[in-house]
Amino acid sequence: EAEVAQSPRYKITEKSQAVAFWCDPISGHATLYWYRQILGQGPELLVQFQDESVVDDSQLPKDRFSAERLKGVDSTLKIQPAELGDSAMYLCASSSPGQGPYFGPGTRLTVL
Amino acid sequence: AQSVSQHNHHVILSEAASLELGCNYSYGGTVNLFWYVQYPGQHLQLLLKYFSGDPLVKGIKGFEAEFIKSKFSFNLRKPSVQWSDTAEYFCAVPAYSGAGSYQLTFGKGTKLSVIP
Image (cartoon, rainbow over all chains, first blue to last red; front, side, top):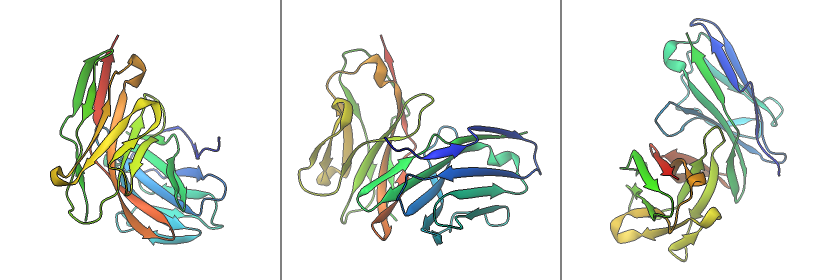
């Protein structure tokens, strides 16, 4: 069964450092999402892509976060500089019409 | 914007007990609803979804949910839980975002602990 891949699974960094997360969606899924899940809460949408275009990044803190999906397949989410409050699980998901969203295993970020 | 609320933060049950997890939605128009499950150390998985039609929706692993419009509810049920059902359960409401895709707004989740 096809799955959404994410790496790394865990990342520990110091505040003010830069971090990057990678996501490879299910093959053929044109829609890709990045969600953030703070411990004890439900996931919250950060950004949605349709192919290589951003559909919605209204909840992305653009002063420090950036996301790209240059070829409309895999995607990278970057934080620079990281802050203590960015500690969370970062989830990638993908979907196609009538299917999903399907979620990846996530990257757990700890900022020290 | 639509939202969902889950009032039970943590539910503890013994094996074979019946389960009902509450989910209430805020919008009175056309409503679609999802339930996701997150087992310890695993990714979010779709349990079931309601778009229209029969308000009683059956999902995977013996779960079902009933859409009750008059109560703004979409509660998740299972007649007899097993230890393996220990997980966190999230109710979510999708908002159509074009090209057949949906953005999900999640509730805060309910952690279920099943005691053997």
